Amino acid sequence: MSGMMEGKVVVVTGAGGGIGRGIALAMAAQGAKVVVNDIGASLTGDTISAGPAQQVVDEIIQAGGQAVPNTDSVATRASANNIIETAVKTFGRIDAVVNNAGNLRDRVFHKMSDEEWSQVIDVHLNGTFYVSRAAANYFREQESGAFVHMTSTSGLIGNFGQANYSAAKLGIAALSKSIALDMNRYNVRSNCIAPFAWSRMTSSIPANTPEEKARVSKLQKMESNKIAPMAVFLASEAAKDVNAQIFGVRANEIMLFSQPRPIRSVHMSDGWTPETIAQIAAPALRHHFFPLERSPDAIDWDPI
Image (cartoon, one colour):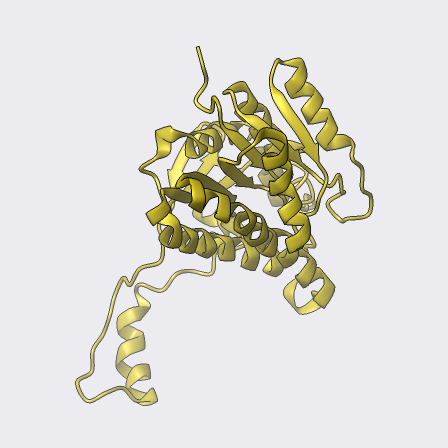
């Protein structure tokens, strides 16, 4: 029996380990030809190796699938173009892109350096744009294609010490929506996944206090390969009517995230002044203010 991705060619960035590896293996198991992209860098960028991408390719081939490695960075237009061109030159086409590549430079905001800011924005937000943009021309010409982007509750909800990462990840959600709006006429879809999983990206979370240790213990229960089925679904024709959505995947749970919309308004026929805003508007809206919370505060039940 053929799989859901039979005949499709898929690029998965950051596929040398963790969530990306699981997605690449799942895509291949469902019949896709896979470009396994990974620069082989540590989370801090200190070391680089071609090994991780090749290892995943070897796993796919040993299981009877088709795959090719690519070690280009997502963080520049030229190298991102090379990633997509690897798919087209090797397999003749490109049908889906999973933007999963990531890095971390965690630092409390008032101590964050320009370099820590730009390195994370370059990989997550710029990288998602560059790789998607490189595939967009092919998708438009063939009038089909699917983008799957990785966002995060660090951006959708909030987290400590991740201003760079949070800004990039919320930006990705907005970028995905724009891609969906601009390319819907070409039957191209763009959706996001906010993954909850224990991986290299989450292994750097502090675990010093009892509360932090308890949180990390919960995270370790969330296997990274649990994200793959949603990525495969969103890349497949089974999701042809699913566009511009944000899904969360946590162990055996699938969540649909809300998107910002007005929830309350107040009107002053004569126009507002700073004083009347303070006296009338702010008190009227205050009941609907969102609390200063982070992801574990809003999603506070144990993984299922």
